[in-house]
Length: 183
Image 1 (cartoon, rainbow, N blue to C red):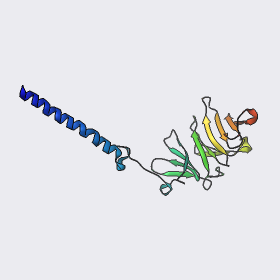
Image 2 (image 1 turned 180 degrees about the vertical axis):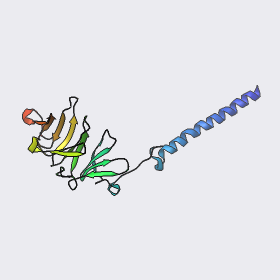
Image 3 (image 1 turned 90 degrees about the vertical axis):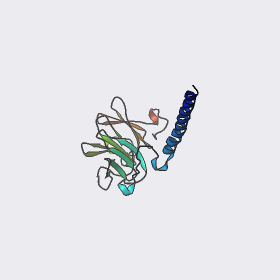
Image 4 (image 1 turned 30 degrees about the vertical axis):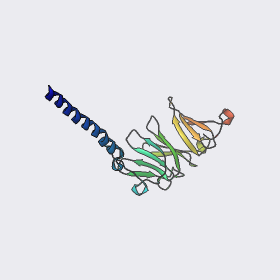
């Protein structure tokens, strides 16, 4: 009986020793500066890697697997390895490279909101620009949202809120009850 009690104590000491070491090993791994995210790898892409500019205003993932990034020097489509940049220098439909917001709609079109160049749609490999000439209330697009009915809502920096439905823009401003024309 005395031998069994000692065996249990020895076993208990080994168990307590193992448990006390485990949390510190895990804790040290979690705080390791080389492995901030544990088993995940971390990469930082900047302009020297092909991003047009380091300040990213918005990010959207398209259904075909690309990441789209809105920057102040163009939109970048990222395939996981390299960036394809669309800016006013290589895309005539972009009147400005200052991209503020972007989103993909349910049909797979990517919409880019620009600061002064209106709204730009990318679909089937082609860009189309919509400005005040086509009925957009202001060419400074600050926000985009698609509702459940498929309407595209466009917030502007002075022209209120626009709804794009079936190829037509309808604008809503302070005259219609908005608290501000900056949306």
